[in-house]
Image 1: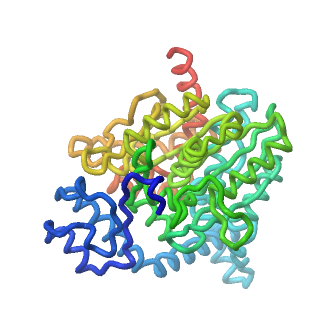
Image 2: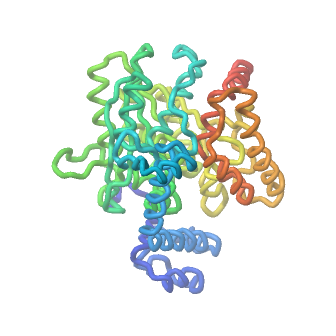
Image 3: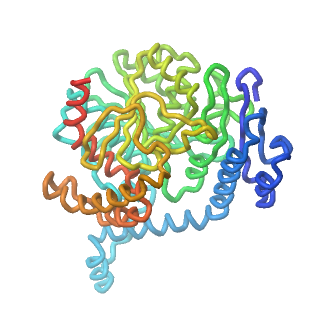
Amino acid sequence: MEEDLYKDYLVLNPESASFFDLVRILCFPSHSLKELDFIDVQETKNLNGLRRRWLIFVSLLVQKILIKIKNPMALVGTLLETWLNLLSINGGLLYLLLNFITGKVIKAPDPSSAEFSSIIAFIDPRVKLDKNIENTDNLYKPALSLMAAKLSYENEASIQNVVQNVWKMEYLGFFDCWDDYLEKSSTQAMMFKDTSSSPNTIVIAFRGTSPFLVDDWRTDVDFSWYNLYGVGKVHGGFMKALGLQKNSGWPKEISMGTSDKHYAYYDIRQKLKELLQENENAKFIVTGHSLGASLAILFAGVLMFHEEEELLKRLDGVYTFGQPRVGNKKFGDYMMTRMLKYNVKYFRYVYCNDVVCRMPYDDNSLMFKHFGSCLYFNSLYGGEVREEEPNKNYFSPLWAIPMVLNAIWELIRSFLLPMVKGKEFDESWFCRFLRTTAILFPGLSNHSPQDYGNLTRLGSLQFQHIKKNE
């Protein structure tokens, strides 16, 4: 690793650790972390406290468990998606039974076909853009960004079909990119051009955490970090997914086209440069939900780190939904300074009790912090601009009862909302099932695209009023 790039770092390698090795982290605090071959660390003076060792232990343990259940979890996901698609294409359970009796069962579509839907699509099946928001409205790009972030969970054929045939926009490509540390492709993104807007807008959407894809969950719970010179500590899992080079960090240029490995940051940056040269007046926005939201803001961050001034001049905004924390306060200060320098607009949407927005912890142990304003929306989709979301670390006894009551209200609201606002807000049975289970774990269903889609449609008037009065 280049010595001139990192001040210090902590890289966790759970594949190399046994469960006994993990116990050593807690039971033998006198042992230096440098002595453990499954932890690559340059500086240990701030890692010897019990709480910090505990968090490292938890991160490694969860990743070890995820590695063990990787294949069963993928199988469950495949079976569930196949079953949901089978139900959908046959018109529901009753029609499926009738078709089975009459020998007319329609097979589930191929997982790579445009007719196949992901689990995310069954939570929120809306595909059409909000017809009440014109492309000249300043609320248009947040709404488009959310729909793009949601669509990024689908397969390439489905994405292309929606972009071209439903949204009537120009499909520009699908990226399936390599993670040097996982040694496999794990990061996906899509790109399209909104030709209805003036100037044309190129949209880049990073896929978020796929519910049954272990590698995505490992990225989320990987508490590795890198302390870049002059930048601050950045979440290592997200950096790896974006294209961090295992032996050289973030070189400004890498050799392109000499192997079958494609890295998200470098491939998308190259494609952007080509498209923006062909479209002199076009601009671009970057978006994502969940893990995809973290990759979106870090993509802009690496552009700033590499001083890609020509690209940054054309960056019209970063829109994130349900975004985890990506770095410490120093990194946040760095980003705020660079965003001011390059006039980059950053919109971080947080819905109610969304647990993911409150991870990793903002405390003296992990020292992760959000930066920029939080666009916070409550369960009535009323918005306000805040410095940070309430109950910032989620696990607070004072918030337990209010969150359970709110989860019950959200389940009731799922039946009331379509009566008041129209059929487009009618929720799927699968979404209501998640809301029911979320009563036991409030904040889990709040992370789904359903509520983020609702707030871009229903919360817009409240938020517009707030912006006018700031």
